[in-house]
Image (tube, rainbow, N blue to C red):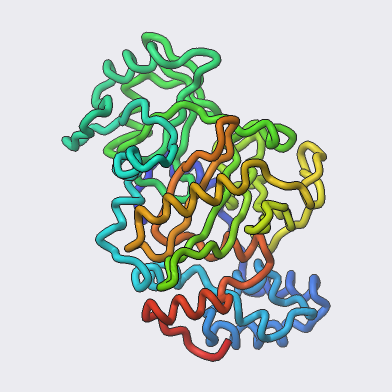
Length: 377
């Protein structure tokens, strides 16, 4: 797992950690489905030995205890524990840094017509250089940069240059000659911020991006669309599109954060089909946004064709990465690529859409990549 700063990582882990026993999972599934715990345990074990290798927590969280599901539908679901073995089969691993290193990725894309957030500076106390980018290594350099760039209406957003899953993001709201103010964390001296929160991790500093006015009815935080793309022998295919809406109390839109929503979006039309929040034992469906009351289901996202065009154009810069996911924001100026990743979590589209990842297209693609899944689909 890629390192994040220790303090911010522990903070985020505290917010997302749950301890649930196997018997708790089975009791919950039994109450929800009206089925006997023993029948559920046997069914879960059967799926664990099938092509999707489902774990018991995943079995419960995906709602596979639902008596209306067929065995064929259940076997479409794929465990997250196979993510990296499958990704390493599907993708040229020598390309991993081109997507996972945010600074490097932005350099690759800067002449391709793909819009990304502007990099204001990089905080990096190692000896790595970032040609053409302001690099901050000391407390005095950080103070000088922030005092010149942060004000009441221009906060600065920071994220781990090689971060995953939204760990360790921060927002700098204010800065003076002695201290800086992080949203939700309070004031730090520049020395303490570098020593306690940054350490040897490289951080990208960016301006705060804004949503297209369409999203103002839902959140004041940046929402993104997760686009899953595979590169087949016939060309790129979009598998899933999922809108991630952060709660107004969260800096990151990642689905594991309490209060955030993941919405299934029809790839061909941009229409929201489902809207869900996640908890340790499953998902909750919504027709309207739970914080604002604004309608979700049936709404059409703006700039949809432009967003798809950007995602496909971006993906072609990384064709050796045959299975990709990217997060695209839709801003007042159009779509903006926030990040692209090698692979992408299987659980997000499965939880958001309520369908298994192992569609016919995916099974065929995995087979072409040399991925061998046990059992029949």
